Image 1 (cartoon, rainbow, N blue to C red):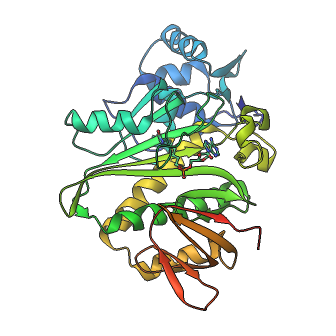
Image 2: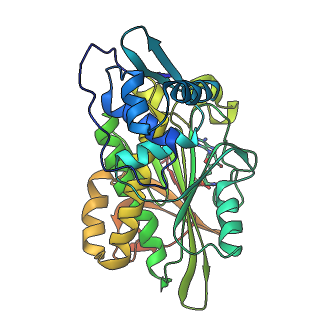
Length: 351
Ligand code: BT5
């Protein structure tokens, strides 16, 4: 449970951002009102007036939200206050945070799925047209690249996919993952204070431990990207003992690094905003020089001895940043620079 700070008494409750549209679910508006007042209480009569319902109906809504895991305190003569949010996704609270942050994106929220990327693909195949996001509190078949698994237990982590129909040249795909990697890394650095870095091509790491992984999947026809699913797995509130033995030394979470829980819904709404903005930038105006410049200060491999593997080919040398196509540059012993376009890179510790 991520707690909200303690409150005090205030007579006028601030209103949530923006007007309430007819389409907004009353529970979402109720939560937005509590969030806007944070850390103070909002009286039952103010809620009743704003939601245009009776105090008894407000109480009924609050009770339902409580049964979904939200800790809403009721105090005599003060009203209601959101105390804490659960470590699994609640669609009303996520919607409330998206609206608070003015992020517009339809979202499907699940307790459990095979894979959020697979669900996004199914919805695209089913004809869904506009961009949308899929979130699940856990995944049974979370996947990484090259048929690898993404460990996805229900422990307050983020498993997210955002689907687009971009009509963009296939060449831009590699740039998109790298660009979103830098945008997400910078965003998470500023809100967590952790020195996160990007590891080519799709990892978010700290001191060599992996905190997040990105998986971009697309249908291409023949030069143009038709549908695109950007998947992000981010270890948010997982504790060390939530990782299997094989990942204990190589994986970490925001919570383990920062030493405290993160509010999953607020964090997720911000991340979706960053992905939508970064995607638009990539589609409309991303210049590869700008990408190189953003990548450089975050590059976890820069100047390190690495082994890059693509299929059967192995290349050893010093990582030298990325080129304008997004390929990893490796300086060989003989001084020549090689571009590495796909596959894996590991640190070469035996030299
Ligand atoms: C990735 O693949 O890093 C991309 C992972 C993308 C996962 C998201 S979750 C939402 C969406 N839906 C999906 O089904 N997938 C996406 P790759 O570079 O291949 O790295 C996979 C490797 O990371 C594994 O072989 C493990 O070594 C390691 N790993 C697996 N789970 C991990 C975790 N939770 N934290 C840290 N490392 C992990």
